[in-house]
Length: 261
Image 1 (cartoon, one colour):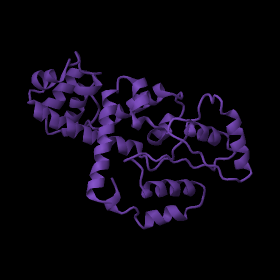
Image 2 (spheres, rainbow, N blue to C red):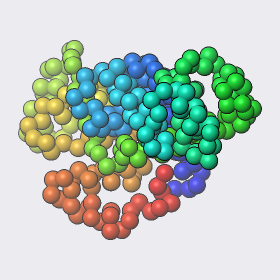
Image 3 (cartoon, rainbow, N blue to C red):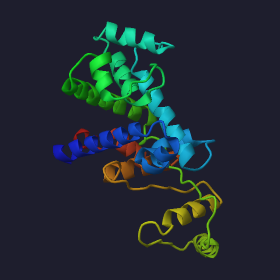
Image 4 (cartoon, rainbow, N blue to C red):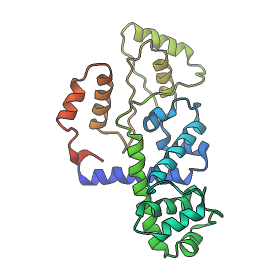
């Protein structure tokens, strides 16, 4: 994979995170619109969470906030004024400044009163120019992205399909496909986007009598490469006691470093 493709993937994740930050205080919209709110990325964090956009959005928002707090050097002060004093009093502590600029622009939970617009942020609070503010904000989002990925570790956990609460008009289809699979027949679901393929597949996975089910969704610029599929498959088989692929990937240090985003 070339440097241009790696840069594209990094830029794409940055874009998705920035879009999620814009909706962080609107959990339903965040769960509906953000690719980062998918079960692939949230993984075990969705255990016990009520299915639906609101639950996914609320979970993603909590994980983003936790990742942002990890940028702070030590315990996060309890009030906004203490955060301002600590972050602006020692600009060499970059993580504190990163948290502050994210709080001012997106979280708006601790510093009161919350700034009304970006002009107030860079003129009245940070006392910097607009270009400097934008550069600092981008750096903070990039560092937040790294912290969030360390927390999520999407390559380590297995994706869990979310079964639909209702399958209108698909019960007979699911029953026939389930019977075919129990008879060791192969099943392929085809069709245009939005017709319910994932919902039917998730329903079949939920009905499967044993835990021998592997679910992997290809997502553009996030995991649509061979190494992501093999890494997830190797981890799945390793959990079942068949570790040959997993051991080969680890021993060979595969994928090559130049492929890792």
